[in-house]
Amino acid sequence: MPSMVKTNALLSFSLFLVLFHGSLGLTADRSRNHQGQCQLDRLNALKPDNRVRSEAGLTESWDPSHDQFQCAGVAVVRRTIEPNGLLLPSYSNAPQLIYIVQGRGVAGTLMPGCPETFQESQGQGSRGLQDQHQKVHRFREGDVIALPAGVAQWCYNDGNERVITVAVLDVANNANQLDDMSPRNFYLAGNPQEDFQQEQGQSRQRREQRTGRQPFRGHDQQQQCSNIFCGMETSLLAEAFKVDEQVARRLQNESDRRGNIVKVKGGLQIVMPPSLRQEEHEQEHRGEHRNGLEETMCTMRIRENIGDASRADVFTPEAGRISTLNSHKLPILRHIQLSAERGVLYNEAMMVPHWNLNAHSIIYGIRGQAHVQVVDHSGRTVFDGEMREGQVLTVPQNFAVVKRSDQQNFEWVSFKTNDNAMISPLAGRTSALRAMPAEVLANAFRISVEDARRIKFERQETTLISRRSTRSGNWAEA
Image (cartoon, rainbow, N blue to C red; front, top):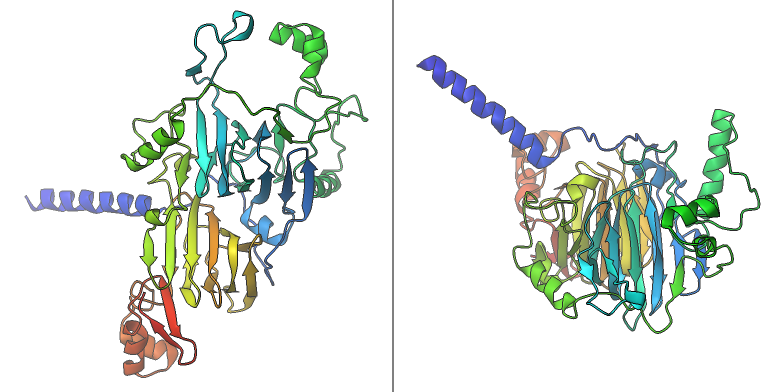
């Protein structure tokens, strides 16, 4: 009998360990193949390095060869789409998260092998051919859209204001099996310039110097076309699509100078339920946190809103709010190993010092500004400055960070390189110092036990705190 009890206890303990490690996501991250160059003396809040204008919008990218992006293994791009602008269909070599900073519209995600469930009615199609396509999704400000590597997507702005999106591509993810960490977008149409034009040239030169080999660049060094059909013979395309060569040649868009965002005259006419927006809004509030067991790649949700105040996970009327999005809320994130955080700091507020346990954090400033400090493992301040709207700052894993707003609110979105990213506060009710015995703190900091208890228990808040009086330095409970 004691043997059986001992065995059951051992099994229970083993199960606990499995669940504990699995739930925290602290096991080795097998989905990333990159050990970044994270010996950083200084971080910077960066603006875009490259701007490419199109007929109906603008693409801005940050140079991925920056040390902080190399450390995190990511690339960042921002797109502005004018009303009636269509972002041409493309796919990437890396999984990505897209945050809708502003505007609304519709998007199509092209999952291979999934059925075309949206169809025209009888008699609608020209020459008797009825259009049918995969499901389209409506998006709005505050949405996060998850895209696996190699999955194509198009996007259309059917609103009255510009659509602004910012995307982080996880080029260090194992899904990217190309020979370097350069982000690459493969366009299915148009004749666009490269989204990461400056970086691509630099990385190609570095790769050639390292390997001593010149890559094959095709038969036509003066090629004036850049979508994936351009390198294929017209006769082969005609045969593949069962059309004449004149139509096949149009797929190559050789004389197209509109760029990757084109103007749709008269608006985009696609098959879409008139109440799609309301239906999806209701679905978000009906059982929004499904467990993923009933989902396939064809039906899996790829979008979740974290911009609405009602979605906040942490909220205080005096200090602000924070919303998190992980694989528990959006199961597809488990496949692409990314997550997101949306934060709002009201004026005269602070997000307590903390570190990211299991992820790098790429912060994008949405509105306003805040004072941010980042500290590395040796106690050096690697960033101490203002972060403003439109800037990007990378906080490497385990580096300590603190944000404080002064005279205005600060809003941000953070992209994190783990599907269940976690933070550990340094101050407050759930902090690491609060979890230690007072005697340990007293001896570690050479202070009295009474002061150690003050450090542990004076601050009762968990994440956000608000200052009522700058003069006295008192912070109100949040």
